[in-house]
Amino acid sequence: MKILIANPNTSQDMTDLMVLEGRKHCRAGTTVDGVCSDFGVPYIATRSEMAIAGYAILDKLASIYQDYDAVVLGAFVPVLTFGAKELLPLPVIGIAEAMMRAAQLFGRRVGIIGMGSYSRAENEEVVSTFGMQRDVCSIRLIRMSGTELAKNQDKAIEEIVKLGLAAVAEDHADVLVLGGGAFAGMAELVAPHLPVPVIPPIHYAVGLAELAVLSGWIPPKAGIYKTPGTRPTDGLNPALAKMFSQT
Image 1 (spheres, one colour):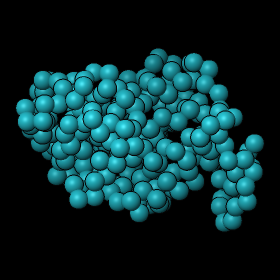
Image 2: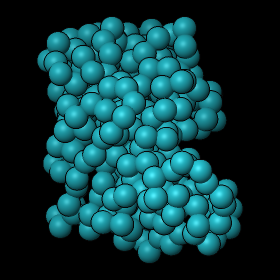
Image 3: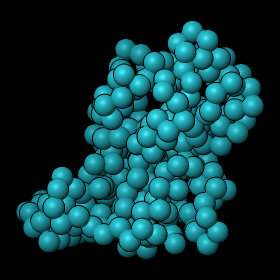
Image 4: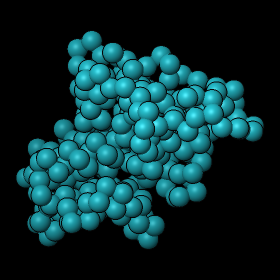
């Protein structure tokens, strides 16, 4: 089985971290590769950047998806998975949906440790997308961007532990989510210092992608993720344009 981790931003460092974690925890016999977008931004932090990243990763996937059995979208931005789920004839799992649903299995009050800005409320949008407003009791953000974290994870360990302890003691979280691909590989470093389960970015997404393939997943012919069918396009690269001629 071949799983592709597709990073919608342009950071190779972040992509490498996610691939390393995926390879460490996948099933025997599964191959995990990774790609990042050819254009866009190194770290997605605003809605305009999300829009660019959505196009960039579809443009990339259109040329290479045929070599894989499933795709993991490596960004804590669920909206970026929707177009890929619609166009690709193979399972697509976003790390945000995998992590948040896993958190519901291991706790009743979910705390998110993430990145970004409180003023932009990106993490709140993740919560509302999954209808988890009653489940999430805490959102705390580290003072590093995704690119900074990917380049120097050691610098963030102490702060992540501090935020996690505060989420448990003050917000009563009983499970913690490390919300972002740049946290790949960090759960095993911080979990021994925290009193509740810690949900990592890649493990569950790769596992669900493998299960989808093994369960005999087929492309939907009805419902919200069925292919758009034949539609006119202008200016797209040929591989992406071809995906709008599927029936």
